[in-house]
Length: 204
Ligand SMILES: [Mg+2]
Image (cartoon, rainbow, N blue to C red; front, side, top):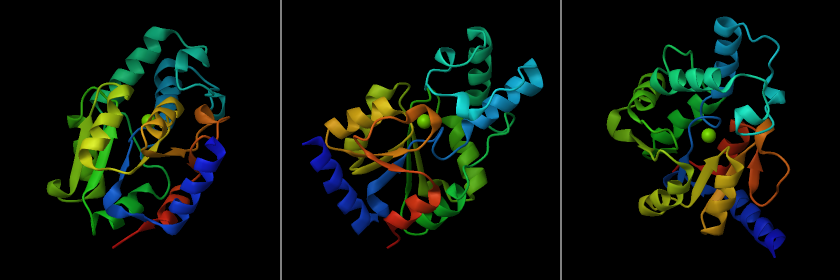
């Protein structure tokens, strides 16, 4: 039954998603947050040799041999200061989001506890007007579904597998943005690049 639903969603997705009905998680989807994390760990904490491919769990303490206090410090810094922590876009994200912004408001729903710093980073780096961009910071993953429903969002791109599965169960079409930490489950449609994602979205 689940496979049937997956096939059904795949065909809907292939037919095209309206720019008006899609929203995005930020970290691990729009931004290459893990690369910033690993760069800070290497340059400022001397933790060399950590690779993105080694991050096989969303929860860093489960897959990296780094003290929890260091994980917390780096994560805190990325949350508070996206500019200073050298956050970058995933390849193609900036261009695709700018194209969407020409026809629709950009909607982002993040589990970050604080929306302000990342909203400012997005506004600056996407160079879009403030009224074309909405960031909702829920503070936790479980709150995303309710927010997306309120926003009327039908498709959501997310890298946290558990959230994708929960949204799927709520009838929201979660699209997994492929990352080393979210593999091994095919409940939801999976995309591997922003190019692939862009090809699914109607810009009208
Ligand atoms: Mg994420």
